[in-house]
Length: 550
Ligand code: ADP
Image 1 (cartoon, helix red, strand yellow):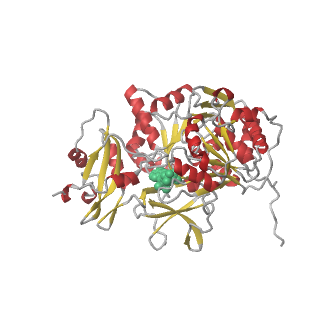
Image 2 (cartoon, protein in one colour):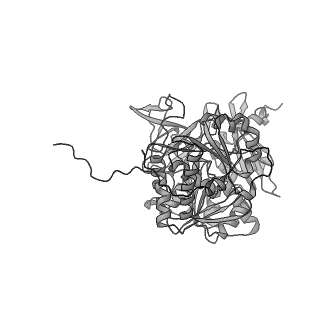
Image 3 (cartoon, helix red, strand yellow):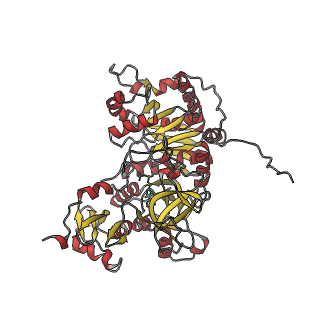
């Protein structure tokens, strides 16, 4: 019998199809941006799609060709969103650069990606002025503002005004059709070890990821939602939210540069936000503000927390005190980012609150399309028993195949199949719930046994006097490494090291209890709002633990 092929239409998956769909079916749905110019800008999907077309025309006028990279240094706002669509939709590649990195690192990343055009918010004008001479590939610098906010100095005569570029175009231009495997975006990993590495997404991977993330067990998004994209667009494309919201016709709110608790709360309330997703640090700021002011959410119902471990105490507070439904998710730049989400199964529904939350503390089950495994040191699969930790590997259509500009594959081979090694250590239980116990580089190795820094931090965070805590490895002459806690107390809280260490009794094995506590005013965070443990390890490398003090 000859092979019978399916007889469905061949339509490549494309990022432009998302905004075309939103403009046609949800054209009047609002896109609201808090801008760095100081105002709140209101637009909708129809207008956004028109401006994205004008942008695509403007890029052609600047000589930008298919495959050219267009860099952005920008907060979450409507112009950045127009760039997401106008750049990728016209077969160019949108390169979101993390503006919180060091200037040298930013210049290195822009040169590595060979950006032809660089678009940036007013906030970053001094930064770009400083690094511009080092940016050999950039032919055009575009300030993402209107004529009224352009600097009146003539020091930079070639500086272009974003709104002027768009105003010069008719918008009479049709979105082209091309191969769905064409590059759409490039994001760089944080580069905590060595230089950052470029991860190139495709139209196909972005659309498949968006289809997976709107599902009920993940973000559960629909046309009645108002979504606040609080994770930055330069951090793995705001976790895909700028694609997911137009896909379902949800109202989209973009918070600009103000990510402190008070500003985020005010925007959530004034725009009637129903869903948001972000790293634990953002939620910590929000909860602290709300507790201090005695506030509640009037419209927010659900949140997805990820990027770093969500402490159980935070999950409890958000669910029990603030009435939210929390889903804990895991992912990385190399996985677009979503790999797992911790929504409950039917069999968990009848459990009591504490048991339900103990399932939800885990980073969760894979999204359809992704697969995970845990491996031993010889790359052999380990059992899914919920207690054996192993090196977490992942595969799927939105998981990286290789890094930009590198021919070597980062993969490990498991039974002839390539898997991406995440650098995380995890357990997986019989129901498929994955739990991160640590990052390989953060694990504390005491006398050959591993202690999970995340477990120790979660316990400290459950103490009512602790605002934030980090557990790091400290050198020990006998045990090689022992845990040290670095802690920020809540304002006005009284707490001694002995009291906090006493709190660990009965919560972990005795030998896992940290050896010492250092109280600090503030903990360092990475450019994406995660605890910067590398810096802490450097700072406390020579800290003398009590039993080695003489
Ligand atoms: P970086 O943190 O280096 O800037 P990514 O944003 O890609 O880069 O971070 C991915 C890493 O973040 C994962 O490999 C994992 O270590 C950590 N991570 C992400 N989500 C979670 C989570 N829910 N719990 C614990 N760790 C997480």
